[in-house]
Length: 266
Ligand SMILES: [Ca+2]
Ligand SMILES: [Ca+2]
Image (cartoon, rainbow, N blue to C red; front, side, top):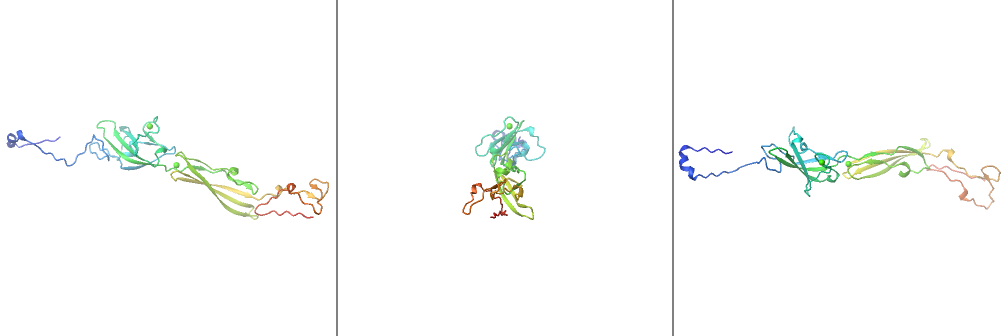
């Protein structure tokens, strides 16, 4: 409201042809939507640029106090409208839940978030947000195992790590680091299988599966038959001087890197 006060002596001479020129230097309308929350009367201001991280379920509910500047904000006093910065489409991935929810589809996208009062003067402001997934997948390694050097060391035989990643896919891989053993140490080698999982945002988790590879015990060796012609279990006919051993009927040679030498003596 603007109040004009005229001197009595000018009233009679000026009232019939009075024109005022009002120069507006600065003005802010509390009822009009503004872009940066610079209004004064409602004291409503939005943060210019915020980051929103999704939770373990890859969701986030955008509340007014996440966008509005200041403290003591009562969320129930405002409504929130979320729009994609590029498409301008309104976003609420969980209509059944009160408020505006965002999810995996909004990761690495900018949003325009408008906060408006639910009561007069219905002031409002908007802010710009960037959505991020900052939670790493949760990785679980296969159990540690002890095998012999005759056993396969493939992942199909020894297990594959599993992971939980709610924000879309992730890439799982592994690499083996081998520590050689010896007879003195009592094992052939220990394989440390490093599993790693990386989600689409570069968050990662790792775990290690230990694989102990033992030598084959002597009890596991299958010895060949004796070609001596004796009528005893495990004995067979003698070989003639120019005969050849049928290898398909021979024993399986069992050796690892440290060989078990089997000698045939005639
Ligand atoms: Ca909702
Ligand atoms: Ca993630």
